[in-house]
Picture 1 (cartoon, helix red, strand yellow):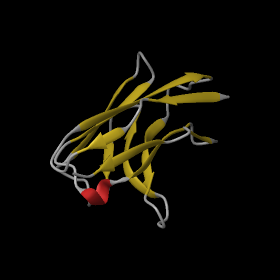
Picture 2 (cartoon, one colour):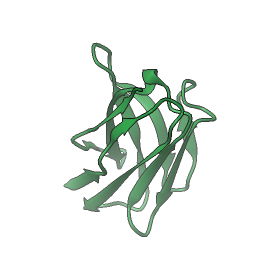
Picture 3 (cartoon, one colour):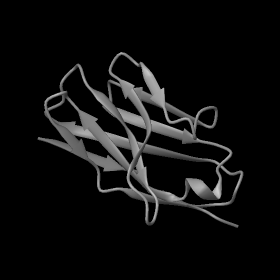
Picture 4 (cartoon, one colour):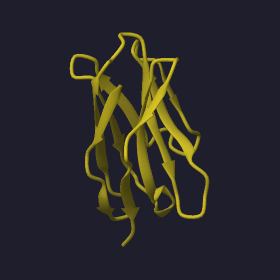
Length: 115
């Protein structure tokens, strides 16, 4: 089993910045992938960014050049630095961990971008 604990999201003004973190604990395998999905009201969950244990990254086109995903393998923690936030970034953000056998999800943290 793997447990994921996400940092709190929050309310941010358009153009603002926010950093999310997600710490994994439990049966962590050295080769894994972690990342973030998000789900806006009335929409399907969508990929935001992923990062492998060897730090290969992937981003959704909508967040490229604004979001940066990183990780600290020693702490089993993944980060999502978000800048130039837009109202359309408003969503519940979910952290995930996958060991390519099973995927685990965090409870989700809300991010609201509004003036």
